[in-house]
Length: 351
Image 1 (cartoon, rainbow, N blue to C red):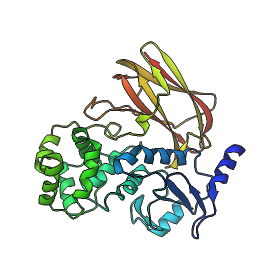
Image 2: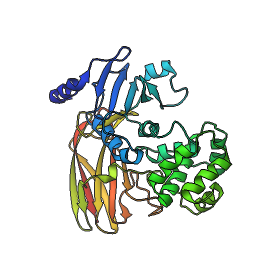
Image 3: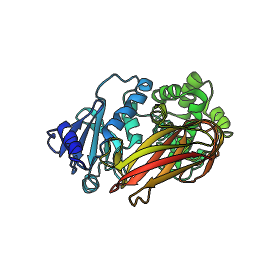
Image 4: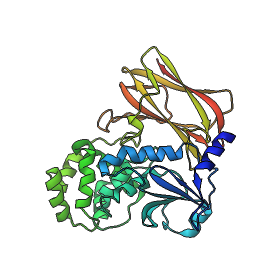
């Protein structure tokens, strides 16, 4: 990491509270290390978290300023704490603030739970966890469980399986596509976690005009999209494009592929992420190519359309190039191994 960036991070770090190794307060959140020093925190992580919170703040009616805490554990400290049981991360409370507890950073799923805590403590899991998964960051997820399994687990207040989390995301994607994100966020406080099916129907009729059975009947006709298609990408898709390209054109995007880059977000599962926005001007075939003088390997590339699942439901662009795509904006996510330190050029070709 260059000396200037080290100095910048250290200058922002406050003396840690007892029990923590460092404290970094941003506009929106306090990041504290548990068995962690600030050095491994990639330089763009704090700004990414602030931008994520700011993008969703209007939906949750959040005021300006601090909204929570992120307790970033080392793997060893996290395992010893058992704070989240067998889960890889969770949301709870720390010093009267809603907090994320995790050995990875940032986990947007848990950050969305922090935001939700400002409007309701907990709601029926197919809505609460569905919203959190819909608002999550870019990462692969597994196959979808049957919707009946998700509904049964939700009303039994059982823990959801990975497939049920994925199904909850898909169901909430349908609800948001049909009724808008604000309406579904507003639905959550009206259906507490211990709601019965009849109580859910009463709240759903009032806000959505349909019972759960009617919603499920409508959902049966909704396409099942790849996980790159049925997440919101609200912050990622609200930026000015880094590249605008049409057919017969090539545009380059320079990348400082290093954890020290002010655009690098992480570390998360051994990688840091750099996110860009690309605008395609017309329907056609495109290619994305990475060029570097250094040996850059094991890069994960996700190209996700800024549109609902019902638009182009078959589009799946996770490292599969060239591809055919509709015009519009796309979120380009590049995940590099954490040790990468290279200059990379991303070429976007309209073929």
